[in-house]
Length: 262
Image 1 (spheres, helix red, strand yellow):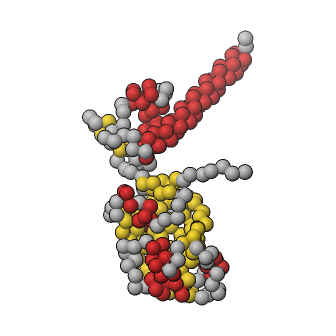
Image 2: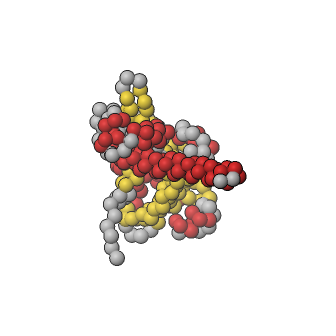
Image 3: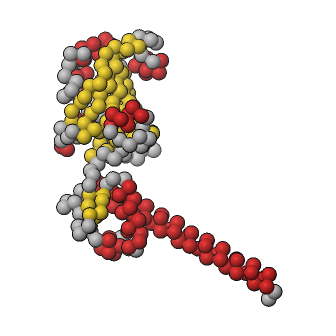
């Protein structure tokens, strides 16, 4: 074989080796991500009551994986701030996410009552001209005043969500003297209107935290937050409460029960 052919053949073998190595790394990364998803579910479900995860060897055996894949999965969870590695102890749970149901219409304090006390820091409250999209959705005249409320909501003292709320002024005026610091707006609306809430339209998406939101939530700037947009109606069908709620994604998990109907 001429020298030039031997060089090309060697180069081809090298390229094949590199491609195979990259494929193995990609496969391990995929497996690590899958394992991290399983372990995250276990963490959130409270399957490690003593706060310590099993040894890497045990995890590798239980999940039919390799120790390298287990280490990579734990690194992913560590980057999320859910676990940490302590010398002489192992991998421990250092953060907790709280469950927020999406199949019932409840205020935050009602939703998380089993997990601690929700308090509200009222940052802004008062009449404000309704932006056009807000006026349209609340069925008020364009430019009409609505009650605007901005609250930082904490669970057991930790920042959890930043809520921006718009309420028609004929209802909202009665909330100006209400205890917004310790009471869900939902309960206040039912008291003021004398009728129960009916249903809500929701949209949930991940958005990048702006500088203001990140500062208020004490979260890293440009971190992703869960944005819940919710338009709530009274039982008679009137739209009464439009909210834009930014949740710290590292402290909340959304869940619900869906029934298939064709």
